[in-house]
Length: 428
Image (cartoon, rainbow, N blue to C red; front, side):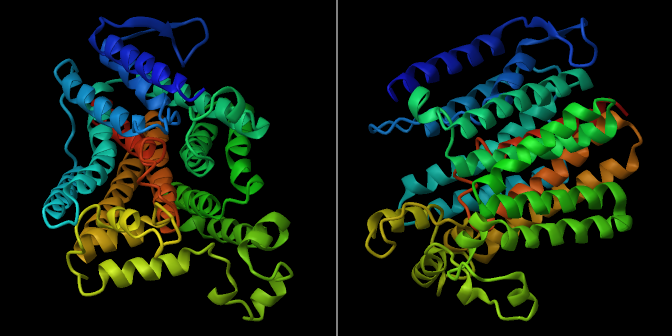
């Protein structure tokens, strides 16, 4: 049945192209029931690509549909700049992102494999192009809200498909892996919290918050729990400043408590499933007690092979993936590093990881500044969503391949940031 993904791919790309080149169409307004909203062709295209990032459309027979789709969407975005009413907004953080991409490109020329380097570069380029396109195509709040709400409904459908465990039977390979999917939910959990505080729809948004938060605990996905906790704390910092400390401590305590009081999570977290919170308080728990599922050993192998003696510039963009493919016995047959931070260090050294972290921090600070400078709830919804969700997703880079899933993970908060830039410029 995975062969059908080629058909889905062609339909989705064809529809995207048709939307982009069309004169637009009238859709239901997200603000008032019964009202209509006129979207241009590029706006329709934006709503489509923003809301379908959770669809992987994988095909395991020598065709990397995901990579092809990323490339095609970026090309269409570049074409789409010709038809947008406004120009892309080059904020300082986005310029910093551009500098980082230039460093990755340089890394391709001293890497073990130029091809692997370009593949990795494309995954980092995608959120960058995604963000710039959003900043150019969105010129009003209803369009931004339509994109966010449509994407949230699609994400909610995948939540139910995930809980019913039916994707392997009816749509194999259509959705991203469960780990990518749950990281995807972090952004829409934050978006729902923002809508809870700044709209009258309290009950439905409260329900959305719970539905997007449950999967990471239900499936005991530690990385996603970390990302969710960080996103919640970041939301509190943006909204309440120093008054957020009680909220931050409460979220942190609940996060730690969940590790010990949810049996499936505790069993996955520690080698000894009898480890208790009392042991943690007494200082009897250290990293040797934590079950990293081979991650710690893998990270050691990669850093000793690729980062050691290459600390400043790394071994070249794509070096980590190339090394793992060429040396399967050294990495127990794994094909991904399970840590983007380790991969950044190994590929592009301290320069690369520093540039990336500074860029993420700059976006977070910019979102805080935008949020604090305005009292317009339309801008605040997107600024706080972009800032908090980005930091939450960024935290998952510690122990997951978040960049590999960039279509479903990083592109969403970057899309929200692009819409934040657009609204901040055009509504003030």
